[in-house]
Length: 236
Image (cartoon, rainbow, N blue to C red; front, side, top):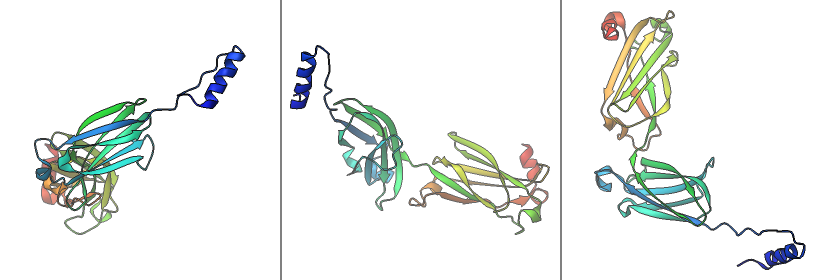
């Protein structure tokens, strides 16, 4: 029903023979979110609870948020004004650590109810890599100017980038998905020739060993090519 002010405006517009409309207020909608943990039950996946949050684009804090036990399988976020949003699901283990996640971008129309079904996957996290030398000398002592780091996660993720060697550690500037992982580091001299090499492979349990950590840490020792025979390895 139009307000008294609106009727007054309409009456004035009619009297002046000039059309003047009144917009009805936006009608809130709702977002129904359902989750699944693949072939595993919540208990088998290690997910105890799920936190569902709704973000306006560009916002840091959620405008809506609820937490439910994982076996419930879903929840509803009510009183959502029309607009564009991001839905974030955080799967929490029994200790409250954020181990799984899912997200999607949605548009809520006037008075509409949006339904989603999202898979909870293990949360991607940054990788922090250290490369100490077997001989305990530093980068300069081994003639290494840069290190080239290559990361492979099964058939789902491959990434390569070079970093300056001093510091002997770097945080990889991308989130790495969980899975069986292989890290290879090649030490390059001033002329960009390989002079040292190291590699480390780990099962996906490396991502579950520290569920509350913000990053996964891996230590990949480097050996000089002349002593380890890595020149043959790099030639493959």
